[in-house]
Image (cartoon, rainbow, N blue to C red; front, side):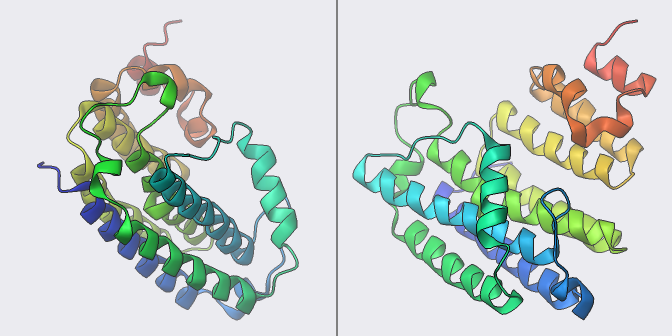
Length: 244
């Protein structure tokens, strides 16, 4: 698949994710909107505040890139996620929704104004610089929110909707970059969604593609809690190269 301009595709992904969020919100029952979550069991409001907080950081990444000063990468995600939960647990549903809208507007405005060259520099950055900016922004633009919304929908009896959201995201993600490394990541993430949704055969099919395109994923897969339901499956062990 031919790669489009990175900025154009990131904007398309963002608009898709925002539409998924609107559908996620529309489909929630009054009880789901009013629910209060716990640190280890987030409610819909917590998920919305969570993805909004990380997208706000995406705005910081964009503005930092324009100044040539990227924010420091977060290493302890679990600690950061718990902090986000505690900071936002007092929000009302309407407040969480309003914050999401404001941050979406800020993210899309910042992304639209970002020079394409900062997303696709002519020379690849050194390894110590971490992933390129477009890969970081892909998480905040679409991957992160859509997967969270899909997981919530699956848990609440809307598995077909969840699958449609994630599968609908995949072609545009693949269009972002033509490298085998990137395509392997995209197929791996889809495999994780299928595993969490109880679709083991579909997950294994995607893992076979992911491991072929990016063999290093075999090292992480046996530790990945998203794939826990497959870890004892002989087919998974064969794909991951785990020998008795």
